[in-house]
Length: 400
Image 1 (spheres, rainbow, N blue to C red):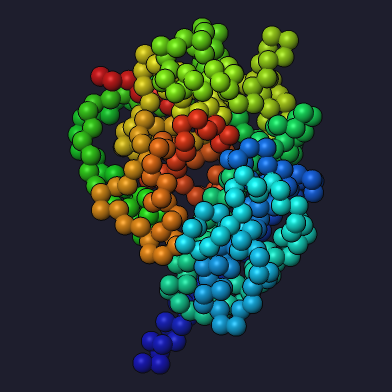
Image 2 (image 1 turned 90 degrees about the vertical axis):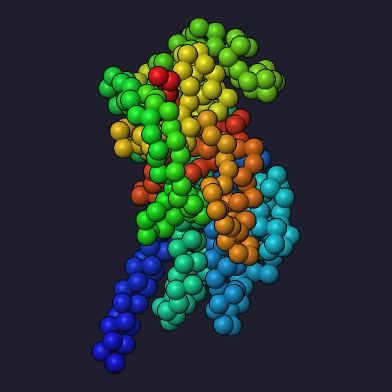
């Protein structure tokens, strides 16, 4: 019996050590993303959908404090009694929070105080995990790690929007490469009519919105092995794509006219030539890079112009092994809805995904801002159809 107990304890130690290492690496990487910033950059919020970097640093810290340390660590003292109010995002069941539009007004706590908060929570959680072997807590820490990885992606795209809306168009750094060039001819892969399994069925981590493995029937279709490029999208612009109301949904037509949209986000027309603001500053547009920072509205209109369409998320998942993905979040024609037998997590964590399953479109794949190994073929991202500050692009489908 003692041999079994020792082996079990050794097994738990390995899990704990791996979890702690993953936790510390994640915490460190978030701060590495912020390393090129000046202090003034941490507080800016140009629009409601973009959160200040300082807020991301605090919110991802609050998540561990709120859901693990405060609940499970005996005698734990919160770093500051008001930080739950400041850094709660949308968890209504947790309590009051700063309105999202006001995150940019948080000149206090200071940047240095937020980093002190991070150090405090990181240290306490590491010590707590070293002393506790509990499967329920491990699962919560794993969720917290992946939650912070999601915010790492948001952090990068928010930083780009903050700097890209600065009149000086300052660069983030010289090493973040965001425009992969594949240089291959687009081919269409025929996917046969049939019944396909959708959803996550492995044993590793996934989100609740990927669960509920089910089958769907798909008609035969042909899907592009490559994403639409800047060169192809420029043809759409030059052919009057933004002025042809027949290509656009009604609310999309209102959107481009009200917002004066005539090109993807971050495109700048300089002396008759398009340039693109990137994390390395303003650069000439790379014709063979996949187009990025377009809304669902624009993706749909482009597909209409080509006489083709966007894939459903099920068509994308059924065909993903046939093409290279992960450089751009790819818009699909699917509404963000629960899978059959979907179950929300109990308590406040149930607010993580389920409450957003309305008026949003599904994106698949990942992007150059996504942390390594964070996405899967079943991963479902989702945004409102007008949003384009993420690294979003499109892939086309032909009906057969």
